[in-house]
Amino acid sequence: MTRKLLLLAAALPLAGCISFGAKPPPQLLTLTSSFAPQPGATQDSAKARSIVVQVPTSPAAIAVARVPVWTTPTEVAYVKNAQWSEPPSRLFARLLADALTTRSNMVVLSTVQSIGDPSATLAGELRQFGFDAGQRQAVVVYDAALTRAGKQTVEKRRFEARVPVGAIDAANAGTGLSQAANQVAAQVADWVAQS
Image (cartoon, rainbow, N blue to C red; front, side, top):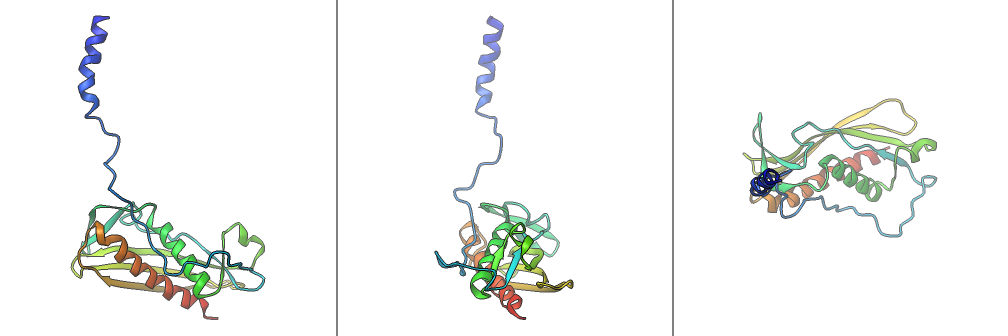
């Protein structure tokens, strides 16, 4: 019994040293959409074109919660105390859906909803979603792949936006990347709207 008490007493000071993960940042980042649909607006795929927006793939450097900074073309660091609320590719897909709804007057459907509907499909790769340290810019590069409704061919196009930032830090990360992502989403929506 005495031995058990001694082991327990020895282990108590170590309890404060054990950590099961990194300390979370003071706040999490997200994207702000410039294209939010109006509340209560009804959409009907019988009266408007429909599209499925797939979550883009992304390289490992940006498929994380941290915000990347390219210090050179071959070196990546991360912004201190900056972390996304969810993977950037999901945030960007949601932004694309908003832009297609409001700018292109399209009905954005899920994959399941599109089974009985001849929808277009937008897929792609989010190639860059972070900062260029040398240029002090927020950078978003998206390689889009569009299959229009009723077609078997795929159209591909690269979209890019660069937004100057005063500083590359947690305070500017969300704002700069939101602006760049909204610019790319607008470009994509205008391209998809072309017949």
